[in-house]
Image (cartoon, rainbow, N blue to C red; front, side):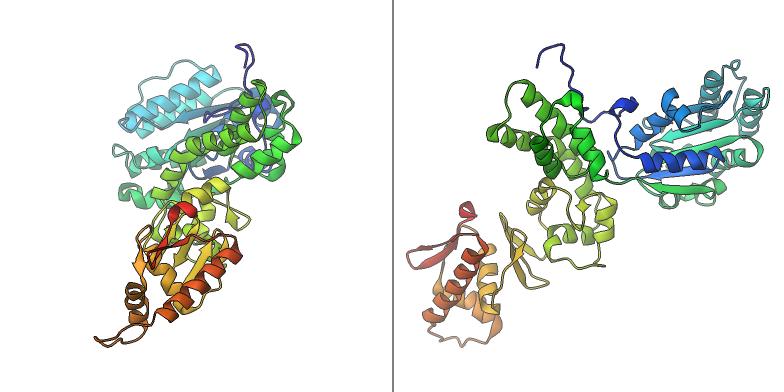
Length: 438
């Protein structure tokens, strides 16, 4: 790419310019409707789903005017709470009144050290011909809600604004407000959290995802957009990274199978920290559901949590990158080697997304080998390890190699029919599951 050629995609940064912001029209219309009546709104969505970018659209004069939020004398003020955990109540009062005064062109506020002074200074700031309205956008509200220096009195003084001042709050957080109150019992009884309506932010619509990738200035052909949409899913962070890497390759004069493979590797590396964060914050039930998703049924524990984390799309994995990530994780009750895995709870083996039709003995043989990948197991060892779990073998039992061979043959046939090839080798009369062949 030439130095003067600007890549139109953003790698992980919020998007303030409406020209680079795609989708969310329904959410913006709902926000505008709520705020036109000064309703308070809680935007809830997982990390990196685009909450900050959505708030920035409300701050843009042109977009705000189009939404009917830029009436004469009104102001939209955005404050990011991240990194402000050391700020006490007086500091927050001063910050909020100061930002409001600056936005409305009012004089500098006086001393603000308590809730009464805060409300009086805000009343003075909002005074004017016909009155002024203030919309306060509080990004990363999770950090504000659990600030150890703030208590129910502070949040109560904010709540009082709803009845005495033309002020509306919009919070953006990963967790719903009710969950945040239970994280910090000092604010549990605050009425501040009561009047909010919740707006959940999830994946983009497919049309918006394709519009994002297919923007004219990117120059990506239809087949490239198809490939990237499938690879990234409908997650805005994944789509922005995918578009950036693809645009970079295209402007270097390369778009072929090799470039596509490089983009896949780059995107997998770029989103790995996001997936690791999401995984660490999932419950055990959701982790189990993610790994065993091809076997999941509606209403199963953990599925709603995965949808809320934006890791699913139409009941399946959000993207091949999420599926690949899931295959590399370990949870109790699941044995895996590459794309071959077995759910011990359901007693079901799967190659990629395809369940295998196995007898109980063939399933037992597979599990025994999955527990020891790369380690040869002779027929006597297999018989003791598998049949010994199903029937009582006498101490002087001499073994039955034929039934071991028959069970392994049935397992190998099922693997071949599923497209897994033959990952079970024979080494000197011993069987071995070869992970490198999967």
